[in-house]
Length: 154
Image 1 (cartoon, rainbow, N blue to C red):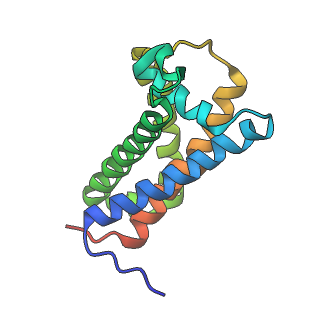
Image 2 (image 1 turned 90 degrees about the horizontal axis):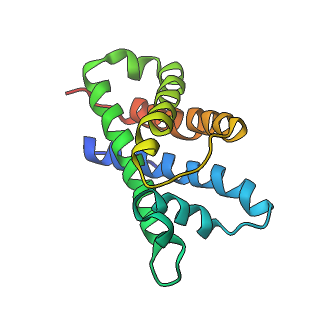
């Protein structure tokens, strides 16, 4: 079976879906193994906007967290795709570029986006390093590889 990608929008959607799902799996499997339901992680994502209300029953915090998660994946994928249209090295050297892009996404989220959000949690070296690796291999790399495979320069 061959996947027929016709447009840049489809490339971005595939990259976002791939990286979003891999990132969710990488983040939820460890916490689920400790008995924490995946819903809690999604509520935590939503709490960046909703604050503690994201954890209240009936507030749909998990659904909002899932939407935010995939919106971020979509944005990251679109930025990479557009950049790859102008910088051929991003598609030509997808492995290195993807790993570096994952690092950049993690740093932007950690030091710019999250501090401006309602989410307040203490800095954890262990969490920082785990998310660093997850963003390299489950976010940046899949985005870059999807773009490389389906990229049609403008």
